[in-house]
Length: 181
Image (tube, rainbow, N blue to C red; front, side, top):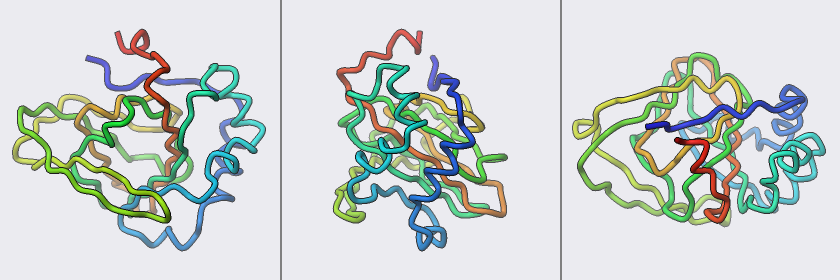
């Protein structure tokens, strides 16, 4: 089973710099956080290089949210699946992604559902107990990838600096199943 697919893009460095300019720096001190800044679609799609890449992929019209995910130094996220409203996330490394990993797991157990609010957005979270999970694959996110976020996964940051990624959430009417065969 494929859990992720690399998506080469041009001007990655420029995109990373312009995206980081929008990052609320107070969030750098959080242990682990997924958040969507207000007016995120307009702000991120106003970055010409990012908009151009999404247009080339023919994905722009399928984007419904763009958020940041931060993992503190030498920390990790719980094992989880993302909100059940979408299957694919286009993830772009922004800062300190070297020696950080997205681990994928197999389990036959059901998750525990949690809901929390960040800024003005409610986020569903489905957490799994690590003792019920077996690792089956891992990805060092050094380049942009589409990830199937309905597969059980977590993030591990072995760095001494916070890891920041941009998560471009794609509506389910964009069929990317051909990439995952």
